Length: 76
Image (cartoon, rainbow, N blue to C red):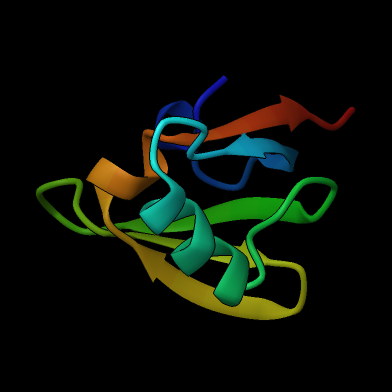
């Protein structure tokens, strides 16, 4: 599942990020978005862009176009 498709309050773990673009992948890694880290979608802007997410202990705003590259495994 993509981060963009996750519902509000749903928690998952980052599976892969931006396999098609090393530029986006390096930006996400710098923000702490890398495989194995828990991620929760907290809010969406009124028009759906950006998303506010909790990645590990940090709160981030991620553009929808970047969230589409982040694949998440659901946590039960």
